[in-house]
Length: 503
Image (cartoon, rainbow, N blue to C red):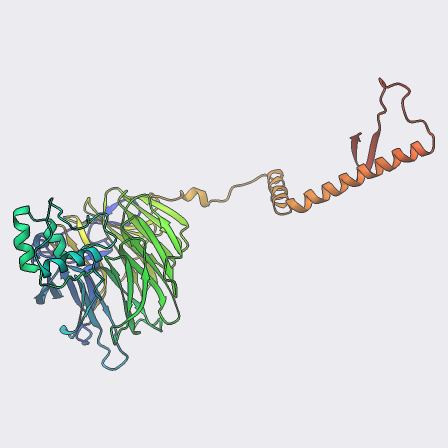
């Protein structure tokens, strides 16, 4: 396939050609037929030969025929069908034994499929949930004898919106039928046991006891029944279970499970919840003004993309740091990490065909693509360390390689304070003296006020004592008539200044 030309924005307000671009166009195939999102892309050395492959959880055209694809370069090596739509893909080390070949975890429906050397290794299924008691009683009645009178389209079943426990798939299918079809459906399925199964909505990895890059990691699952599960990497048992007020859709973790970790979950109710070790419920909550479309952790800052076409930066305690407005809707987000230069930045794919790279609120780079990008992945691919992989809305595949000489420089014409703000002003001497005095008063304001109050009370006390002494000495300081009141003026001399008070 011929490489597609794309303009590159280098942060100084001008577009440049491929010669001065930071990226090399390695491959572009508009007919690659890959339909996925960022959470279902993973780069890993799945065979342990030093050759990194691209693992794709493909949704298929129109969400039909989901498949697991493994790409080497621009070519698909293997692909296999999936029983349900994929929710996330991740690579992790399960054990310390040699060879250190990472395993692949693919979340699909209620199961996590684990592969080693691209061969099925283990299947973890979410535990079943207790059925609705009223629903269970009604199906038991159908087993013992004639079904209860239906009466209406909903029949005797509890309403799906007001039921304390959600209904099973079998009952939901029953409620979708016409009245004429309900009796035949009950006779066909009344002998089946009622099962209520949740599904996985998101997945990520968490280091178990070491922070090393090649350390053993646990899987963290977010489920449709508003729970977070941490799985043991060897036995695949549930190590921890945490509850959330809403269904999690994006996860970001930091730390180690055995030591201390912090977990951020963006949920469907538009909030981000922060959990820590040994906490069954969220410790902090970040309320967003719109639904989140992505969640990335850059060092200690949580970067959130929203449906209001903006990026927000938050601390782990929920304090907003900055906001950047985008020129178009955000379709996908991911992390760009350049280990050789210690750079971490956020990549955002926009609906106008741009991929913008930000470090905090500073724009570093803009990549223009022929079609809107729906998924992003950056890392080692093949034997190249800094490779950017993008899939487009039409199913295309774009591969770019970051030049070894490329340097990301913050743009001066983009959002943020102007460069003139950093210039020092030639402040007059009197102004500096006034500013210093103001700062001193601000820092020692309480002590200065207390000293002033003390001097004022002492002044009043001395005046009262002098007045009393005058009365006791019969100096007649009192006026003869009420129309001519006595007036005392106290004068205190200190450091050449006079303070006058009237009583």
